[in-house]
Image (cartoon, rainbow, N blue to C red; front, side, top):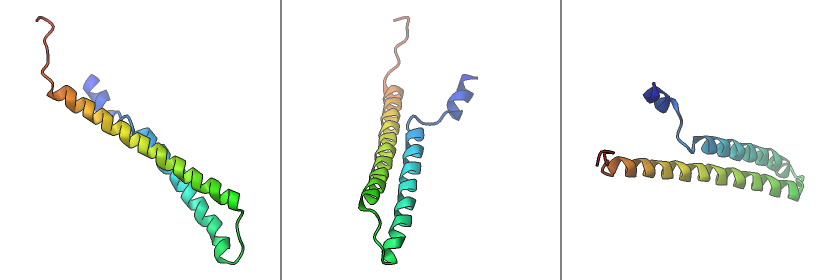
Length: 90
C-alpha cells in the first residue's frame, strides 16, 4: 500500500513549477493584449505594463523555486540511495 502512494505522489517542486508557469503565462498573455493597442497607435498605461512584467517575473521566480526544490529532493534521494544502510542491530 505504501509503495502505491509513493508512485502517485508528485515531486516536491511540481506544484511550485505549475503555479509559476500559470502566473507567468497569465502575465505574458496580459502583456500581449496590452501591447496590441500600442501597435495600433495608442499608448497603454506604463505603470500597468510594469505591473504585468512584474507578474511575469514573479511567475518565473516561483517556477524556478519549484525546479530548485525538485533538484534538491532528487539529490537527497540519490544520496540516501548511495549511502550504505546501517542495520539497527549494530
